[in-house]
Structures are given as C-alpha cells and as structure tokens.
Image (tube, rainbow, N blue to C red):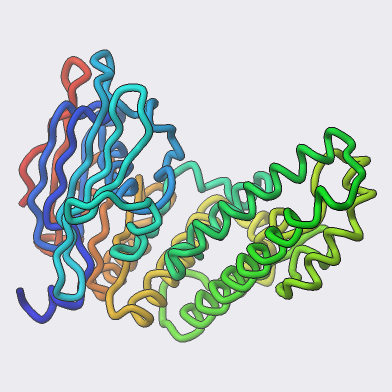
Amino acid sequence: MSDTAMSQLWLSNLTLSHFRSHRRAELELDGRPLAIFGPNGAGKTNILEAVSLLSPGRGLRRAKADEIARKPEAIGWKISGILQTSGQTYEVETKAEAGGNRTVTIDGKSSPQSALGRVSRMVWLIPAMDRLWLEGAEGRRRFLDRLTLSFEPRHADVSMTYERAMRERNRLLKDMVRDAHWYLALEKQMAEAGAEIIANRTYTLKRLQAAQDDASSAFPAADLSIDGPDDTTLINDQDSLRQALEASRHMDLRAGRTLVGPHRVDLSAIYRAKDIEAKQCSTGEQKALLLSLILANARALAEDFDAPPIMLLDEVAAHLDADRRRALYEEICGLKAQAWMTGTGPELFEDLGDRAHHIEVTSEDGISTVGRGA
C-alpha cells in the first residue's frame, strides 16, 4: 500500500445482497472519490445508505432493519465491506434476517454497533437536510449529534443511556408518581450521561469553528452556537444537572415529560459574511453553509485522526453552480477523502476527470445494476 493510501480511510470493497433495489452489487475500489450517476429511482442513494450502515446508528435514512430488505423477497439483507485505515484492514459486515434485528461483525467477531465508530468515521449530507435550518430543532440536534459521533464514537452509547433513563422518568411523570425515591437513580444516570453529551457537543462545535477559521475555502463560514429554552440545556456539570432535574420535577409532572436537559438544545448558525441567521439565507446559501460544515468536519477529523472521514454526499450538485462544484471537488481531492457522490448525469462530475471512479447505476424491472467504474 502506498504512503498516500496509508493516510486514507476508505472502503476497498463493498458488497450488497438483497438491499433495497439491489439484488446483488459489488464494487472494487482504490480510495478515489466516487461519482455515481443515473436517473432518479435507479438506486444511487441506496448505495450511499448501505455505506452509512457501516457506521453506528440507523444510517442516512434512519430506516428500521425490516424496511430495507429487498421486496418482494423480504429474506433479509447483508452489507459487507473491507475497510482500509491507518495501514490496517478490517472486514466489516452488518445484516438482518427476515424479522430479525440488525447485527454487526468486525473481522468475523460479533460487535456492538458503536464498535463501527472506532474503526471508521463518516459524515454525510443528503437532500432531506436542505431544510435543516427551516424545520424543527430535532433535526438540528440529530445533525449535531451525527457530527459529534464522528469525533467521539462513545457519544452514541452515552446518548442511548440518557434516552433510556429519560423514557423511564417520563413514564413515572405520566403516571403522576410523586415519591422522590423513584426518581433519584434515573436522574443520577441522566445527569452523568447528560453532562458528557453536552461536553461532547461543545467540543465538536469548537473543532468545527477552528476548522472553518483555519481554512481557505470557497464555502461560507458559519458561526455556530448551542441554544435552548433555558440554561439547563447547557449544564455540563453532573451535580448541577441532577439538581436541575430534581428542581424541575413539579413542573415536569404537570407537563408529563422532562423539560430540562440536553435533549432540549437547538443548533444555531450565523452566515458570517452577511451576519444573518442561516434560516434567513437563500436556498443556495443554506446548501453552501451545510457543505461548509461537512467540509470543516472532514478537515478537523483529518487533523485529529490523521485521515479524513468517508464522505457521503447525495445529489451534491443540487443548488451548486459550476464554480462551487469545482471548488467542492478540489477540497475533496485535497483532503484525499473517499467521497461517495451522486447525481443524475455524468456531466456533473466532469471536473473530477480521472481523479474519481465514474459509476453508472441503472434500473430495469425494479432491479438496480451498478456499472463498472473508470
């Protein structure tokens, strides 16, 4: 393996079986970016979704395991890949039998999903995120946590611990349980996990901000902040957060849910050059801001872990003019990132030339076919 490849994180092989529209597909790769083109509905995004499931969580569509098996067979699905990183090779696989839960194996050994985050790092941008700044805070929290997970794989486990404890606390609140003893252990658990969640998110924003400030980029910089309905959303001290939960108990009983804590935060962004909120920007400016954050995330990860993340950019050319497309491709190639990009036609990727695999995806009778890349 060359020195250039040694500094990369990339999939050298991806195999899909009965996944979405792909009965079977296999790609052999060499670390270059991928320009995946074809008509709408051909199955391009399905390939990116498959790659995203080689990271912790439910992938870029947040689909349940039984929703992504190829129909009408519905016999289950499997994704396997060979991951190259820091001179090491990992065989990774995730699958689900019909009616079963998703499982993960790494080098043939059963592993928790969180273990995927320790051998690979991924960031992605999909069209559904184009309205990120216009819709509710839940989507922005999910976006922030996905970025955070790329820096700290443990963030997924901590978030799950917090959510489980909060669900139990909310059940007590809905049942109007007033005995404090029922809440103490749950609130202690929420405070421990919640303080770590806030610390992880805060670190992520600092790294993103620094990566934007230190870079010369054609994409606009954003000033980021974490906001919330009150100061309790930003408490990163366990004792203080536990006390806040205890003090809020009476108010929470009336509401039937937990009203304080990191699950209430929102992510705010200011378009720095114009000093306006992201939600007030044009569609093109909002897309450019999102790309700027994804690129900043990739630059920061490349600095922290000596390799950029795998980047999944679905319909990336939408709302970008020719100059911005060229600028995006230059940044991706400069990072030496394996970026999986989709678009409707090959002309969208002409500026990449032989710096990328060019792969055509077609569909006939509901079966997707992946062409050989250049």
